[in-house]
Length: 317
Image 1 (cartoon, rainbow, N blue to C red):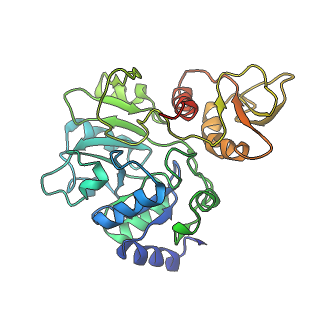
Image 2: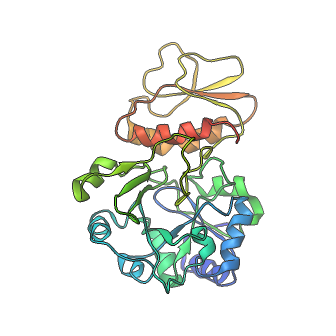
């Protein structure tokens, strides 16, 4: 059921969370499938609803940096980044405190925790009123297209989610940047709307994960699996033409190409990021047999957009 973010709606969401249920929650990035992060069975319900591999950790949402102090070991780098980018679309992977109350299932059994403070006012209200951290991955079937509206959540998960709080379209429309601060060197695990250059301006050099599948590394945060954010139909990238049966997703000037939807006619990467998942979802249906995406530059926010598209286009493993 989709409900308005009224005091009654927030109160009902809290009742369901206390009972170990999941709730659809708007954030500035994408809609989250929220559950009490301290209840093992509630976290397990997230995995059940999403059909998600349990080794892929969840992002833990808090209402403030002060609340994070109870969960993770706080480094000077983390404090500096939180002061500037929190609340906002930045997830930090930090070492768990020994007495951290968050379910180990939520962190994939690791000694680290992926944590962020969302900027969306409704998410903030819900977390504050509930009084405990919320585990909240994107509210869609695992590896599918992330939801940017309450209707997207309902279309993907149906009656498995008893309540979805309607916060309108997501402003950012792209999952958070994820930075690993649990080791000796900061490492960017997932690009997002907060760019690596912005992080480096605060804490210095940031490493990147190499996408070499011959090298194994622990999955410390969401979005690190090779295939993710995927539509049901095959996705073809850097398209300069359109094959029979394909729906063409444009970017910028398309000339004479038969574009069905355009991420941004003005080639604005911020607009493209906000439209990405919604437009992929619109094209992932009959009569189309595939989706072709025009080239998007690997600069600025385009790095994050291409990361999502490459994962969405990857073959099943």
